[in-house]
Amino acid sequence: MAWNDNLEPPHRDVAAYPDSPLRVLAGPGTGKTFAIMRRVSRLLEECENPKDILLVTFTRMAAKDLVGKISELGIPEADNVVAKTLHSLSFSMLQSEQVIEATGRTPRTLLKFEMNPLAAAHN
Image (cartoon, rainbow, N blue to C red):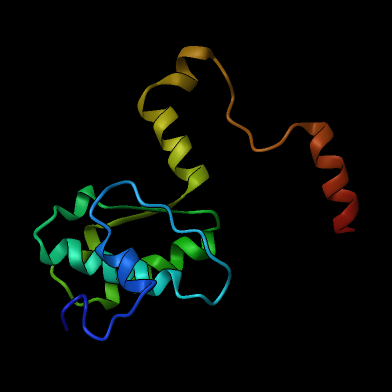
């Protein structure tokens, strides 16, 4: 199936957008993942290097969903497209630039005083 088969706005607008980066902001159930998968299909059909395609989302579940949808595309090398959370991307950038090592910082997600309200809410 071609990337634009039966594709209508606004999904076609997302999939056909020629520039990068692209940010899609929409509510749940609006077809963001569908439109992004069509964009990935278009880029791969146009022989974009899959390793140059980066999908970033906020949650691990959404990133996992994107990885699954990419593999369902059935396009050679689609599995080389990278999908990450914003936090994972940020951490990998800090690691690749040796920022954490150079600053002597210890990576952590929360400070102790930030953990207390979360722990209390969980109990």
